[in-house]
Length: 156
Image (cartoon, rainbow, N blue to C red; front, side):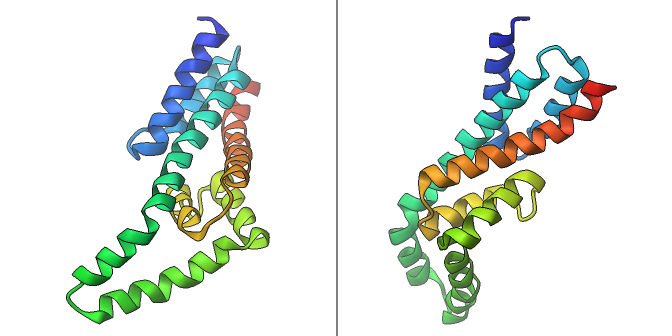
C-alpha cells in the first residue's frame, strides 16, 4: 500500500476516533509501529485526524456557549444544579482561558490523556482559548502520544 493511501486512512481513522470514543487510535498507532515501513506517516496522519476532530469539538463548544448555558439555567428544576455546575465550570474556564495554564493543560491532555482530551477540547472552546494555539498544542501532544506508542513495536 502506498504511503499516501496509508496516511489518508490514518487521517480518517484519527478523525473518527476523535469523535467516536469506541474507535481506538492508540491501537492503530501500535499496529502501525509493528508494520514499520510507513509508521511515521501513519502517526502524523493519526495526529492530524485527531486534531481535526478535537477542533470540531472545540468549535462546537465555542459557538454554543452563550445560548446553551442560558437554556440549561432556565430548564433546571432547582438552583442547586445550576450552582453546582457553575462552581465547577467557572474555575475550569478561568484555568483554560489563561495561556500559561491552558496551553500546558491541553498539551498534557493530548500527550497522556489525563484529563481526557475530549473534555478539555470542549472546555477550552468555552474558555476562549485561541483556536490556532489549541490546534498547534493538540497536534504536538497527539504526535508525541502516537510516536511513543508506535516506537517500541517499530524498533522491535
